[in-house]
Length: 167
Length: 258
Figure (tube, each protein chain N blue to C red):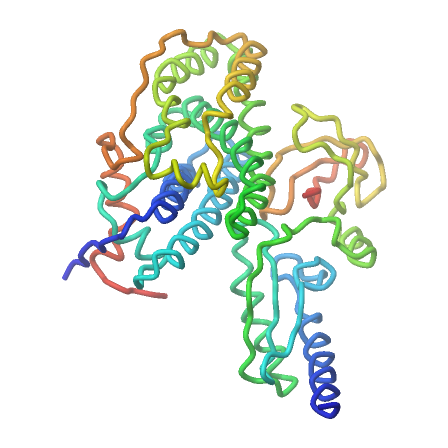
């Protein structure tokens, strides 16, 4: 079955490439591949199956992302695809690509800092302002415009900014 | 024509999942009631964000229950088409929002428990429950931090904020015993290490809660009499009112979608 294997792997590569281009509707500079939301693409009996994982349990973007993947695959001529949601392993910002971190910063969102303690109360955490680079910043709200972000303010340039929470 | 309630076959794993899902849904709904009404914009977003996390957790737990029950019920029918006596949530989470201090204290008492509970549940022998726990644990860590910081600000704040925070602690305290509730339905699941015995988390919960209350200069209530009933469907009068809002659309217009 060499021929079938080859055609499956070619189909899988095409499907991955198409799905990987889908962007997060709330942070449109990041693709779902940058975010680590795209977990797997497999071919089951000739049908494309895409596995995605939510960032947060209640992330309202998941339905939209699933729909966008189906559309992206259809544009590639791949119909009848199946989108699966997987919970394990739990999504972490460690999966965000370096390219993704750079794109976030250029977009004005401070990328997640590893090592930020989630349990320390009034935790002192240093987050650089994505506008001017100053470390003189303060948290305004632990919860921002989407589940994955917190709201910060730079005390040097006075700009408020989103911080992509380390999760 | 109004939609009738579903019937649910409450085998131990189904009842287990419904109890936790109902906690998350009802508390999530309570938090959503603040949307547009919180004392400041940041807290409006924070409460709505936490509500969203909880409703997400509820959906995962309901979907798990639906798969195990396998009678055609799904996450929507569990949420929209069970009557008040079929709900299995803690009495704590259905208590009305009251003022901001009461909402924060309710969140604090629940989140400190949920955080430790889901962390322990990541070792469940059931792969799906362990996966749901791993996501919930990460989210609850934020909820604990947010509500703990607010308990400290309110308790160690002005005379007014302190008075309100203490009143909330005193009123809600008798609902905390139910956090550690188990019954015959849980016994087998606990013995098989599918679920955690919440009793094993009591000492840690008490330490964490009294630690924050001390920092907040609030008194830890000494009364030991505890309310119970939510786990078997005996609820306070508040849940029916909440469900009438939550369910009115699906009850009046069965299967409505948009």
